[in-house]
Image (cartoon, rainbow, N blue to C red; front, side, top):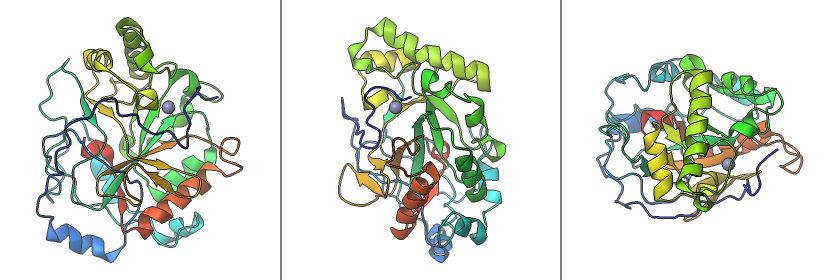
Length: 315
Ligand SMILES: [Zn+2]
C-alpha cells in the first residue's frame, strides 16, 4: 500500500533548502497560559528540531479569544469540550493531555498573496510547550483509530496521497477523522507520492494540483497545506503549489516511531515541533496497531511536559 520509499517510520526530511532559521520568536510567554497548563501536564505530540518556521515571528500566545477567521471555524469547538480522564485511561494513558494555550492572533500565512509561493514551515515558532501531530499517506484505515481520536478529541492534520488513500475503504474513512467542526483538516500529499525533485515542472503541477482538485471535489475547498513526499522539493514545487492554492509547505523535525519519537535535533521535544506520523498498521509496525503506537507517542509527549495543539491555528 504505500509508496515506494517512504520509509515511514524513519523518513526524515531532506532539507532541500533551508528556510530562514530565524530565532524562534521570543515573546514573553504568557503567564496566564502557564498557570493554566501547570495544572495538567501536557502532552501530545511531536518534537523536532529545527529551524525555520517560516519566518515572520508569529505571535504565540495571545490569550485573546480565538478569532475565528474563515480558516479556523472549528477552533473553538476543539477547545470547548475537553475529553475526560476516563477516556484517556481507556486508551492506556494515565491522564488527559493539558488543554493547549489559546492560539496566536496571527498565523504564519497571514498576508500571503494568492498565487504566491507557499511558506516553507518545518517548525512553528512559539514559546509554548505545544507540538503538532500530522498523519501522512492514508494506507491504514483502522476503525479503532477513529474511536480513539474521538474519545481523546485529538487535534491533528492529515496529508493524503490519492492512490494510497483511495485504496480499501477509501476516502470516507478520513472523513470520520475530521472531528467536531471538522477541526482536523485533510491536506495534499500528491496523487502518487513521487520524489518531486525528479519530476519536471509540469509533472509536479499535475501531482500537486491534481490532488488539490481531488480533495476540493470531495471535501469542498482547496486544502491550504501541502507536504511533499519524503520532504523533497525545489523551486518548481513551490511555484506549482502556490499556483493551485497552497499556502504552506509543511515539513517536520520529529517522527513517530513504534514506541516513541525520533528527533532530527537533540533528543527531546521542543516548543512548536511538528511530528510526522503515518497511517500505518501491524503489517508495517512489527505487529503494533496504530492506536497503540499513537498512545505510546502521546505518553511520551505528556511525560516531556508538552501538549498537542491544532496546527491550523498557528499556520
Ligand atoms: Zn508520504
